[in-house]
Image 1 (cartoon, protein in one colour):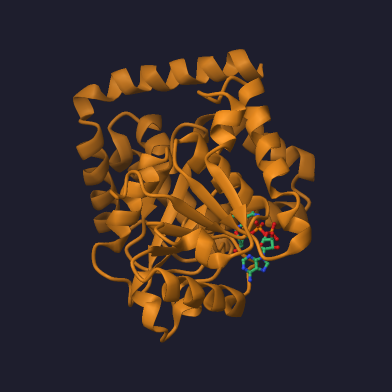
Image 2 (cartoon, rainbow, N blue to C red):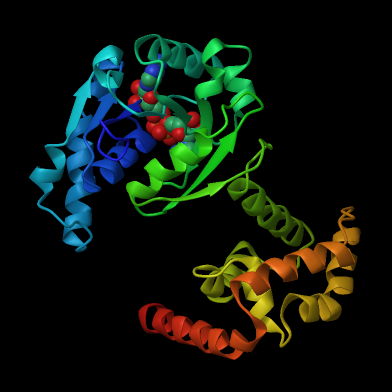
Length: 309
Ligand SMILES: NC(=O)c1ccc[n+]([C@@H]2O[C@H](COP(=O)([O-])OP(=O)(O)OC[C@H]3O[C@@H](n4cnc5c(N)ncnc54)[C@H](O)[C@@H]3O)[C@@H](O)[C@H]2O)c1
């Protein structure tokens, strides 16, 4: 069976497992959820149905709930869950020994399957170590819940087989997710490193009495977040200053360097680094299209203003 049609396994029917099953099944894939704990086993299908009903009520489900739910099978038998699947999305508790034991049992039944861990904080090396199946292992870290937050970070370990990240990316794209490939493992991946940078500063501002929790959240919610909902920090800066990232850095790099130094962090935007970021942005957006993109940004902000006020 081609990778575009073969069933997908979800290992662990908790918050993330249920949410992955919703995403996979609503993208027309057969899903088998393995859940070993009896109390969870009893409620997984009900939870999947409830999420699908919420999506349907918000006009976000293309088919009737029962049709989508018909693609989901819940089982306490790992062999039944993973036989014939192309990818096993592990959503078990965040303990390396639990994940390791689970992957060993999957690899024993289905040595071809891509082993994808949802782990938020463990790297492929920490999970796979010297295990024989470590070449089939990646971390595929979702947002929560993956049926509403489409990005999924694909993280290889040093032993991950060549081509495995690309094969996983194709499967995830096929079920409506937006994979981002990391070149190698790093603590926190990208999602939590960006989130961590913002949180670190938020705590510093609170500690120093600069503003309240509510005030700091408002600057994000009614300020930065309005743009960050549809552009990343590079595109935001690129569109903020005529001339793009190089012009932005010429104007702002010294100020940001000083703010970083005051927090004990010395990571200046060197000329080479800025030139590389600018080069990559120009591949995405030639400067002669810059004005049009600024207008696009403003129209996107207007759409959000109509929704959010
Ligand atoms: N919750 C989040 O915001 C979030 C976001 C991204 C990634 N993650 C990651 O997803 C994974 C699951 O997190 P969660 O929030 O869904 O946890 P959870 O506690 O809600 O669910 C874990 C599920 O795994 C089951 N389980 C227990 N032992 C198992 C075993 N040996 N094999 C298979 N399943 C087993 C549990 O019964 C439970 O249903 C973690 O690695 C976590 O770091 C979580």
